[in-house]
Amino acid sequence: MSEAPIQFDRNTGVMSGASPWERSIGLALLAGSKVGALISHRGYNACANTLKTLLPERDIDIMLNPGAIFSFPYGDGYWSKLLNRTFKYEYELELLLLDSKDVDYTLLDCGANYGYWSVLVSSPRFGSHKAIAIEPSAKNFARLAHNAKINGNRFYPIHAAIGAQRGVARLSGTKHEAFSIAGGVAAGGEEVSVISLDSLIEDGRIPAEGKYLVKLDVEGVEIEAIKGGSRLLQAETMVICEEHGNDRNHTVTRYILDHTQMEVVVHDPVTGRFERLTDLKVLDRIKVASHVGYNVFATASAFWLQRLYGMNSAQTRSAVAR
Image (cartoon, rainbow, N blue to C red; front, side, top):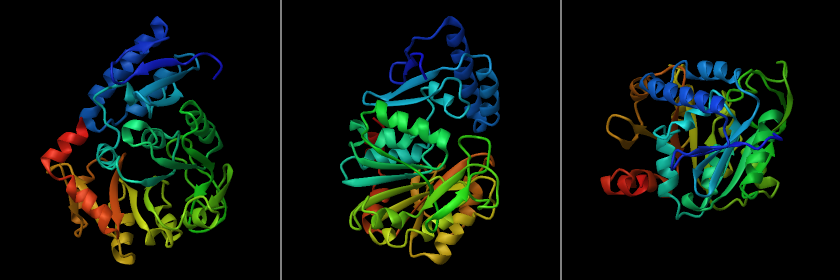
């Protein structure tokens, strides 16, 4: 990361510091995202990573908003969709976070990867909230720590995996966006410390009382993470869990409905509304792409439920989108 990074402003579309060749690849990545959006970006990551082999190793710093910089290797298949200014990454979550900019909450960004949500939530446009970003992969963590640094160290990164209890596990996987400890200690890969959500309270990193948003993108250990957060879930806490599109049993949501006191809410793309989920068949309709994840919102907090349902007014959605 010694060479100065390319700069790209998502608000204006201006790219600076790139060579003519790098600009050409950028245009291909942009075109691929616009076409790929029609099929949930199926195949985009692989194509972008192929193009990346034609580029010199270099970073790109993307200005997400005037107070938020997100850095990643130029050409990265997962994050290069951000070159498409019409692309919305987890749109329903962004709606909630923008609507909650006036709420005094802390984000627990579990499976943070390079820290996209921690960068945004801690930015002035989103309310300058506290954020703790937890990432198990050492390579990803270096990127995460770099993004914390270039944003004034305004969020706190932790190198660990999230599980049901403290311990040690091994990572599996080859894609930076899909490392997992689901294989347990017997699997090959990098050894990593495991912490629980409640250990953040026990270690004095967060108070037991407060408002929390817990983003769980932990590749197959969402249930274990929830089990390890029983104390935290007694606070004003909402969990945002990833439901994998290829899981037709809807395992995470099924567990929440059957074994916790939390209510589950989904953003219905047909109605554009946040709706309470009581029938898992609704997820059969929503989860149309097997290769992507879908967010479900789970909480026993009347405050957070009111916040979610309050966004169903057209006036609120319009104000948030601006």
